[in-house]
Image (tube, rainbow, N blue to C red; front, side, top):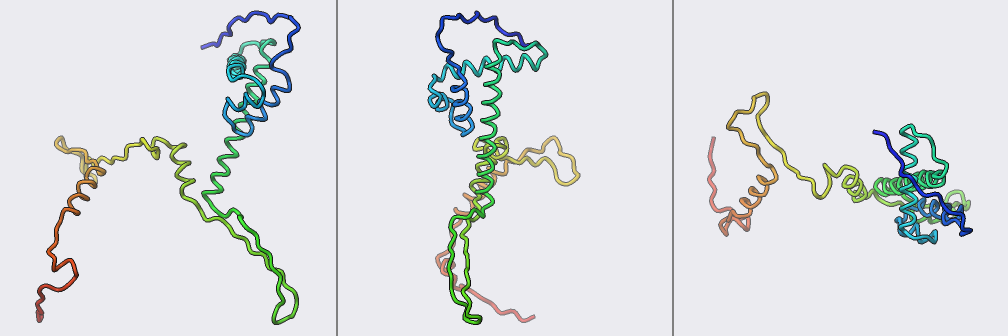
Length: 214
């Protein structure tokens, strides 16, 4: 399916300064490189959110049209350039943030460096010793990553259920029913906690014993 550009009115030459200037573009790209939201990037560049989104939309249409084989539209060049620069900047910010998350998950980040000097009791020389404190691995960073990158398996709305339809190589019969292990575990938990033991067994004492000679 080909992408058709919408016809646009030629911009008048009223002498009004162009809103998407080189300085505004640089500010938008720089803000996007930090990973801030669209609204904040627009504020940092001194333009409205609607203007920023409109420019990005025009740039995306132009880029997709070129990728589809259409000839470049010179009037849309600045918007296409802005779109590609901002897209690359936001991808760079996401990659940097993910790298930091992986570092936290793996641990080993230096948090404190202590250097002390002392005289060696054997040689009598001054020895300098440096000790580094490092972070421990944090499973929560891994959980955050899995929840967002593999939502179908680890997201909060994922359904954990295992169906058993047969044993070994035996084919499932028409009367076999799927077993929800989560529900089964819940029922088992309630059953175990509902069991009441005699008071004499609660303290671990021996009620009755018999010695059997073999």
